[in-house]
Length: 302
Image 1 (cartoon, helix red, strand yellow):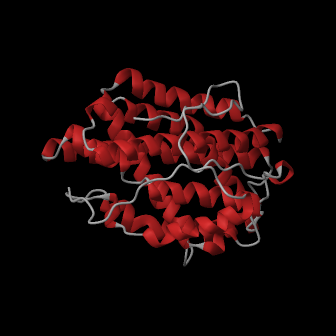
Image 2 (cartoon, rainbow, N blue to C red):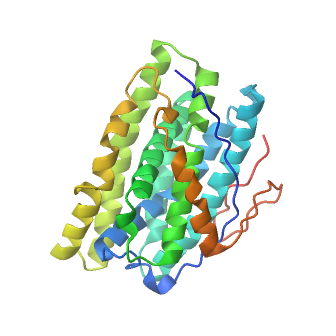
């Protein structure tokens, strides 16, 4: 698997976002249906980020390259902050009357079963697979600014921050996998098999949560909302339409996440700073504050 000729070092940015809770179901300019698709994705992030952190931590003692050690430490810090901010986001959804705790419990059960019933190498390969999915979704969001037109700036800043940092660290888990699992046919089959499995579980789960949110929000029969969602996902510049080639590339032997070189998007962090203020980027040993009953992932120094 080919490593890139350039290096991208992730940076921990301790952002807090000014989310207007009263707008949780209609913060996106495209309306409630598309807003709730993004809300459904958010439901999966806190548990997902914890799983990603744990699966990479399982192998931190086997990481020998100094740069990869630093990248893993930053990856863990970034994912911990993502989890914290999406807990706040999801709390707003729960306060609006949606059963977020029940949704998250299902996600936790799915991921806990993987932890309990599969080898650590498979858990890491699932993380690599889901990191690719989130990275190409992030690229789709950043490459289609029209999907956020007319939207509340606090929510837009959160999604763009998350997307930028997913881009920044999109190869970290992949590089850990390469070092600890190695190359060859067995590695390829594990990587692509886990990707197929992850897609078969993730997308139906997202669809189930999305439809339930729409049902509870009384938007299932909102034809205008469905049209706006279709346009943003599958239209001429639709996010999902845009990511299909990158999704398929994962099955190529020798694939590496930075084969999709979108470094130019990282310059947009200045737009986010304008909304939330200058971040604290220095790594610390402090844990993140609790924002729900469940403990949040901790920042880490590998």
